[in-house]
Amino acid sequence: MGDHQTNLPLLQHYTSTLQSHHQDLVTRLWIESKKLWYIVGPSIFSRVTSYSILVISQAFAGHLNDLDLAAFSIAVTVVIGFDMGLMLGMASALETLCGQAYGAKKYYMLGVYLQRSWIVLFLCCVLLLPIFFFASPILKLIGEPDDLAELAGVLSIWLLPVHFSFAFYFPLQRFLQSQLKVGVIVWSAAAALVAHLVASWVLVVQLKMGVIGIAVTCNISWWVMPIVQMGYTVCGGCPLTWTGFSVDAFSGVWEFVKLSAASGVMLCLENWYYRILVVITGNMKNAEIMVDALSICMSINGWEMMIPLGFFVGVGVRVANELGAGNGKGAKFATIVSSATSLIIGFVFCCLIVIFHNSFGRIFSSSVSVLREVDKLTILLAFTILFNSIQPVLSGVAVGSGWQSYVAYINLGCYYIIGLPLGISMQWFTDLGVKGIWMGMIFGGTGVQTLILLIIIIRCDWEGEAKKASLRVERWTEEKFEPKE
Image (cartoon, rainbow, N blue to C red; front, side):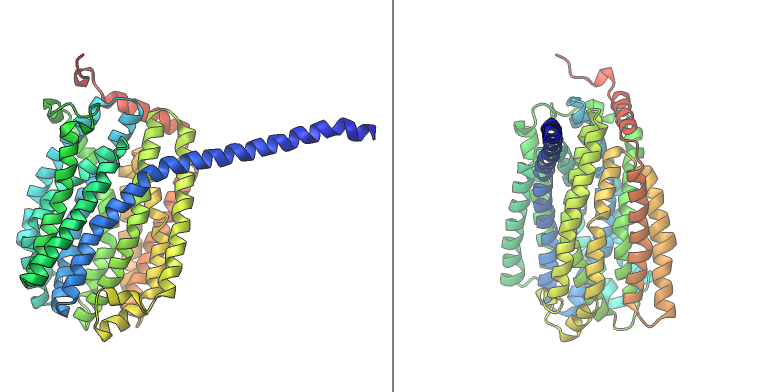
């Protein structure tokens, strides 16, 4: 009895310690989740909304005829997709720089970084113009049917305003996200979606402008977002980080170009990967039907992909902010929470795709032959969604940490040296057709890349990364850039 009474306080202390530790962990999870979702929620909404603009347009085209759907899909997937991947990637340099500068309380530099990004991306848009003007011969050169290539080339010219909107929209979005100004991003996306629905009804339904009218509606809606965000920024929405246009934006442009280029290559290699699948499919028999079916699957994948891409942004901002503030442990914890959350959501959507395998294709097409091919690709779509629920999050960690140049090499090796050749080999040496290409690209490319990034992040010295981030911010923030009192 004496021993029991003696040991009881120790037992109570041990139990209390466990409960306290458990409570601390739960509290940390709750706090981190709130910080994460404050960025992720609006990011997902804005991305789903902006992507819905293209999906709604594709749905309108699908109910015109098979050729219009295939041509619009090629124009959006190949030409605009190539362009969007590069612009999006180059703008992601701001996630590193603005995020770490904001964490280090170097607020003035955010406005300078934004203006530098505008300069670099606008010049890039000008350099990419030949891709739009010569889209038809380029598409014919890579094996697309003549009628498909001609119409896709015409649509590419009509979509030029969308091309230039990227140079302003993507930097503004990252500038606002890095300082948690997420409300305006949501409202600008909502305004763009409303504008798109109204314009689609007027131009396509009422005025019968066909697929050209669909391209015009995309131009209108994609310019609404940067105009609203720019108005908010300039009119006092960001008093600490926007102090007006500055000549400082022209200083250090070359260093900014190098980081933007590394970011662009990193994300482009990811973004273009599955778009190549659509191009290869255009060279197969029954090209229109196969392109339509694959484009529907890619649209569903892209739509769901906006969720992990929201986590890509969220974890990038959280990691960059924590590293900029010198908190390596906080960056590590943000990585764990965001990865687990995104993976759970991806698993849920993977199950939904399997359950509704013979239904979701009807959103885009009423063609029996197209719907039949879509149904055959359902399992691969489900696996793609599952893999893509974790891979963008790991890439977001890389962006927040400033590892873009290293990940670019990883993406090049995994996607284009392993995944793509494996997919093409499976098409040639089996009778799986487009399914063989897709399987090789999923398991050989995305799977290997995800495994490598996972190993790198698990072995990462987060305190060391925090020190590197502090040095980076100090190097980029020179005294002449500080605002005068």
